[in-house]
Length: 193
Image (cartoon, rainbow, N blue to C red):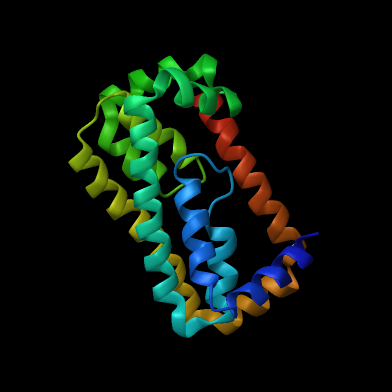
């Protein structure tokens, strides 16, 4: 299962429109889509290390713009679309606790959660719902998303061949670890707040 996805992504990285696909996934992940762009970013950087920082920039910019879309959902559409997304991910019963934590720790939540597998879309929607400063939200999002994606790209650019070899030898276990981490992020939000 993971091998086919990995091989497919490696083939997509060689295509001229790879950056566009990465931008779309990065944008959607920040507002509605459950899969983080790292799933595409890592294989794409490994397949074309010369473009690693370009891919990180694409991820960062698209993620921040997607975050602004999530912010707008929270700010203008919390009662309809926002509530639907919150319910879709099973966070309806924890939403008020998340809002309260957000009111107290806003910028720190953006900075910390933007680096973790905890769903960033919840942060973007909560930022809008809490009427958090849009300027501070954008600056914090640029910082946290940029650090995350450029760190990944930098490590893959510098140590690409050994990392690629490590990933390919342990693809199944790394795939399961990633999947468990992703699910764990969603579960953590449910039980932490």
